[in-house]
Length: 67
Image (cartoon, rainbow, N blue to C red; front, side, top):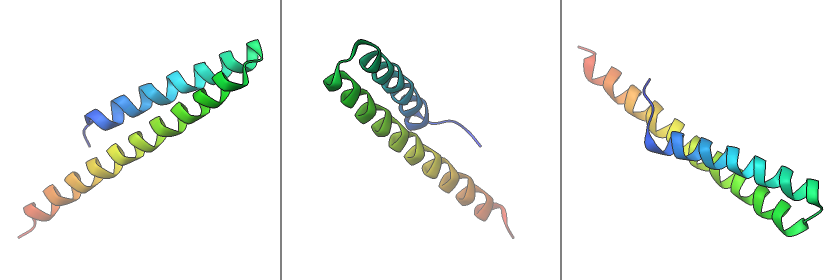
């Protein structure tokens, strides 16, 4: 199984969102906390899309190899 662009970018966005959410909570900024949660969820969704895409590619390769 390889790694694709959506997996990498999604996990980076997810991590950044977690940091942003934690920062918002630490300073008591509700708007920043909400933005962080949003970014975290968008990143997680993008990473999942990348996982599904990669799984589909792997399945297609394995199907092509069968006699």
